[in-house]
Image: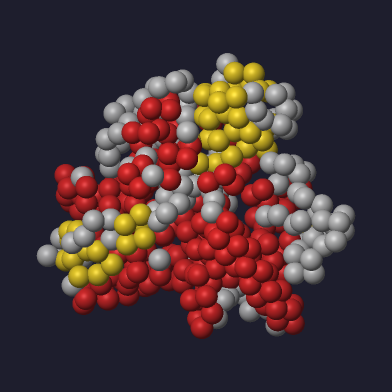
Length: 395
């Protein structure tokens, strides 16, 4: 059933398919060991339930020297794929470096960068949104945040894209996608290992330098944890914000009344960003494993069962959202799960929101109308929903 998500028509608009799945109920039992969750309340409860998490990291009997492992030979994962107490420890350490104050200090740089990118697009007249604005903005921001040299940002973007494509459930991923992701991961690991050596000798005041030195009662990130954390921040900070911008602009263009409303009252932009996240989420699904016997809604679930949480479906649950398929920048406090819930709530959510808000304010602040000159081209992926290309022109 979920393989239908790979169809080109479904990829362009997965929401009618989600509705078909949801018609079977907010929790669909495919078999004893596999469930699909589409209901907002059920998905929210599951993501906050400690009975659901991730399988324990794999233990490598003969660890590859290129693969970061801990003292027990376990593959080191980012905190995104860990359960407490490992998750709690790692996230606490990273949070000490990735602070709200640090994000607030990025606002002036974000404004300057947004103005530069929009000014270039204005000069071009006709341009590809993804190439000229949606990809460069988060790439430059997260690269500068981590202290990555300008000359290395191009290959970082390639590695991030390769790894992002491998985030789909295993049964939906082509072998060549896995191969490319493994190669990109190794390149990332090697790069950040070298950068960690440099930052230990010569800290430069960036986030990566802070991660190198951060501690909590003597506890520090190991080299492997440091490398994997930097890789997570780099990939997550790029792909999701790029998709927020692309999906958000497309939603506005497909709903010209909402575009006019937002251009006429830019104070609505923060709320509009939340509606964009709800309406066409950059992250469409996530997976969890039952760590013990539990329930999802009214469905009993046995230990070891796999669950796919369709965030895109939950964000349009008619039991929770009035007119769920309508895009409304004035929707009061749009509820969504686009940034997760519970202990895995997106650490970079404030940064993603800030980037979206500043970019939309800059673009709409030009006072120039813009329109599509081509059909949108979607990335061939399911978990991360975003555009590969969208050509626009200023009037």
